[in-house]
Amino acid sequence: MSALPKPSGRLEGFPGVSALSVRPWAPAPVGAPAPASVPAPAAPQASFGARRAPGRWGMSWLWAWPFPLALLALWQLSSLQGWVPEQVLPPPATVFQTFADMARSGELWEHLRISMVRVFAGFGMGLSAGLLLGGAMGLSPTFRAYVFPTFKAFSQVPVIGWLPLLMLWVGIDEGLKFLLIAKAALVPVAINTCQGIQGVPHRFIEVARVYGFTRWQMLRKVVFPAATAPIWNGVRYGLTHAWLALVVVELLASSEGVGFLIVYGRQLFQLDVVLAAVLAVGLVGLVLDKLLARSEAWLLRWRKPGL
Image (cartoon, rainbow, N blue to C red; front, side):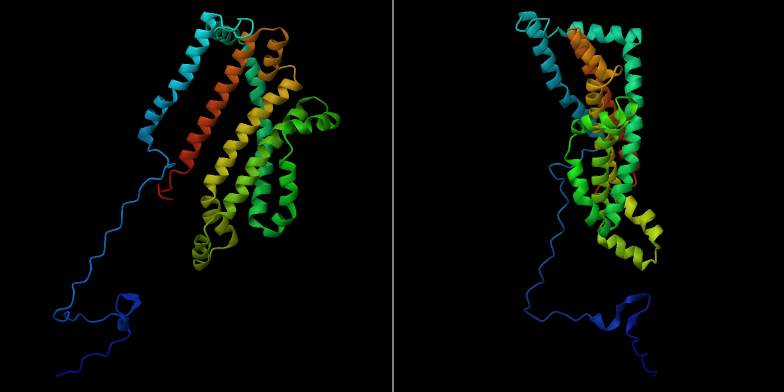
C-alpha cells in the first residue's frame, strides 16, 4: 500500500488559502445545540435623499407644477380684483403678450444672444482657471496650505464688491463683464474640484499602486474618474453663478443684454417689459441647468447606483 502524499500547505487551485487552515468535517457531539442560522443580509434601502429612478422623473415633474400654477392663479386674481394697480403689477396676459411680441420682433433674441456670448466667454475663463487651481490644491497639500486661505478670503467678496475697482482698471467694456463672470464661476468650480480630488477613496489609490500605475495613469484612470461627480457639480454651480453675475453686471454697466432690458423697462416704467425679461432670464437659467444635469447623467452612466 503506497503512502499518502504529504500536504503541501496550500490548496491546489487556491493559492491564497492555506490547507492547514481548513479543518476536516467531524460530526457534532451528541446533545450539542444546533448552530444558529446566520440571518440573511437585509436588502439595502434607499435613503431619504436618494435619486429617483429615470422612470420617476415624469411624476416629479407633475409634482412641480401645482406651486407655479397656484402663483399664476393668485397673480391673475389680484389683477381681476384690483388688489394691485396694473401700473405696478401688470396682468399675466399683458406680460405674456409682451414676451411674445418681443420674441416675434427679434428684440428678445438679440439681447439673449449678446448675453449668452458674454456668459459663455466669462464662464470658459472661470472654468479653466477653476479646474487648474482646484486640481493643484487637491493634488498638492503644500500648495493647498499656501493658497487656500487666501483663496477662501477672495471667494467671500461678492461679485458686485469687485465692480468699482475693476471699472477703474479695465473700464466698462466687455472686459469688465468677462472678468466678473469668470470670478463668479471660478469659486464653485475650484472648491468642488479640490474637494472631489481629496475625496477619492484611499483604497482606490492602494489598488492602483498594487497594479503599478504611474502617476499619470493613476490620475487618468483613478483620480479623475472618481472625482467626476463633484467636479461636474462645481461646473453646474459655476454656470449658475455666472448667469446670475451676468444679469447683475448688465443691470449696472451695460447698454445691451437681458439685464439692460430690465433696466430699460424700469426707466420707462414699462413693467411688462421688466417681467418679460425676468421670465426670459428664468427660462434660460432653467434650460442651462437641465442641459448640464443631462450631461452629468451621460458622463456618469458607467457608475453603478450604489457607487
